[in-house]
Length: 414
Ligand SMILES: Cc1ncc(COP(=O)(O)O)c(C=O)c1O
Image (cartoon, rainbow, N blue to C red; front, side, top):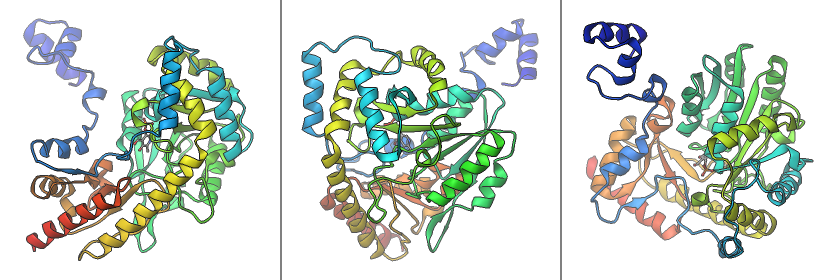
């Protein structure tokens, strides 16, 4: 409701303007406008369409079909048995911050624990990063198609978000760097960029990062780099994707967001971290206090074991994901009308197929009629229309079953 609508309703009803705003035209309580304007999840909408359909193959969410490895689950059990059930420091327990400091230093150069804050997973890290630097009326730029949370979070804080779209061509998804720089005007407060990207798998090159960082330095623009898929990277001979942390000093306006969800299969644990300038940490601690107070104590203990002992696991997970990616690309390329390429990172194929110009409708029909659960491209912004997202982090036999169902579904439609 606008200010003026509130005033009119107040006059007609005898309420004060504030009461009319709070209760809406029929007395129903409303959330504030910025919250009501948030986009609901289209992936949920597709999943709801599949309720009651037996034997749906769920490729729509961004998680593996495997449970967290036993050495991490055992560490959490031990921590619980030892009584790790209390609040911790807002920024995380010291041994985990130190372990993360060593881990991040090994990947991206010297990063002391004073630059690290433990969070309740990646999505909370994104919210905290946004709360640190943006407020009402600030201008934020995001590169899309993109997992919706990055675009919606700044809007909760009253910021406006402008999007710059990747383009799709013979080389897959690519960034027009000039277009991005043009959008990063001096009045921009923050760039939100996710690489490797969900949903496209697009991965920024080191050179692109250098150009964007130089530009943001010149204009004092904050970079919030969502690097939760950095380990799920298939570049030749590399064990981690290019990162802004490789280029920026730790006291620059760069906040890197990361998570235990993807590299250690810990989605349900809700554990992540932020790398940020040490000068921000006191304020970040206050925000953690008022959001969650701390990540769960026994989960943090398990996190230490994950980072310290998990490297062989992560590397074998990435090898499996690469094989699944190639397997699925190969199988999908055998279906007429499907245009798919193998991206460099993350765990999704974002591809076009007949009927995808209305991707939400197509995905609902696919789940209802064929029992195949895919995410519609439009869930990731208007730029994603014409595509669907398939998470390939699962057993290849299940991928084959899904491909066969998709093939039959498309054949029946021509
Ligand atoms: C791009 C991106 N960032 C952040 C997250 C957050 O994940 P979590 O909150 O589980 O760490 C996700 C989850 O799918 C994601 O795709």
